[in-house]
Length: 466
Image 1 (cartoon, rainbow, N blue to C red):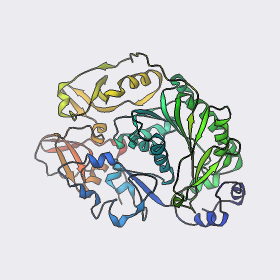
Image 2: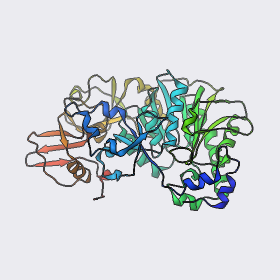
Image 3: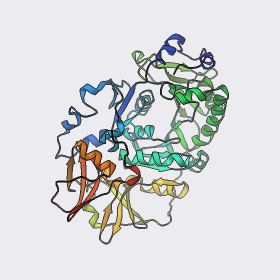
Image 4: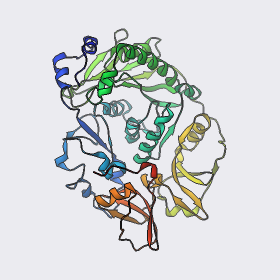
């Protein structure tokens, strides 16, 4: 959709803006990009050749790809937009459909953090989860907390985090102000702030119709409130990533000046390859560096991001906590469900069994005490005498034991499973079976005498037929 004249008039002072090229780009369709989940590929069933992932009917087949995203590992452009709903691999968490420009955060953090490891990251405005899964893919973090203030958006965030399958990602539902109690807790804070959405005009015609200067002013004020409250949980020398999908200076460079006004932050300049088409900009007062993305200069949509280091503040002081209704438990029978090489801690909530990476045990207990946590570890299953009913979270993770029986589906069968349609399984064994598609796990069935029960979550089933 071609932006309005009023909007275009506000762009004249934006660094790197070229009116005619910008307008021409908005006459074209948005590009499509995806980011592969490397951990799922690495953990693909040994019974299935990994080459199947690039077979002729796969999303990663050469004829579907239009090149790699230069600033992000395992990310690709597609030649056209397929029906992602009808690709079983997207439901299995093998990849995430994400706008390429926003993947620049991967490059920025990889460069800034370099060899640092065992860090804790907060994604403050996380839904639907694209940037959360990006953080989860970086080797620097042992804990990632994805927070979403809006209750109605938490379910989508939870679903995408579950599908990604990373055991070190947790979900909370809190106001940014609630994080004041965690002053200095996180090493990295990502604030992808709610914005006026002008960077998405090519993808979202409603955003173009709704845009107006008053909306920009409203968003700018809200962003300042989020930045004020949400950054208190960032430790001294911690890294703040600020981003929007807006072009407006009021929501971008001027908010950098707002952050820099008291000397609490210093700007971080990231070296970029000029061939990428990313525009480096500076805030008008404090000359903080930011990075602008225009669809006429690169393969991606409108985006802005900046990296800052916190110069002042403290370090969080840990203290012992005893969350209510949590009992550390050791169940010998879980060894048949869980990869024994994993260093995990088991906890129970009522009849549900959860695991977290042992290194995150105390931190997770603390978060449970202070915040409203919606996902706290991988739910292994529900206790049933001396065994469990396995949960879909276990199927989506990379924690499951290689001893669990699997059954490979073709695409038609996988789609029927995702729809919870009846179809015949050529299975003679009884009991719990983990279904796979191209070696990537899809979910559970239970084979019984004369029938098979489908345990794919009812709320997640797909309705599309073709």
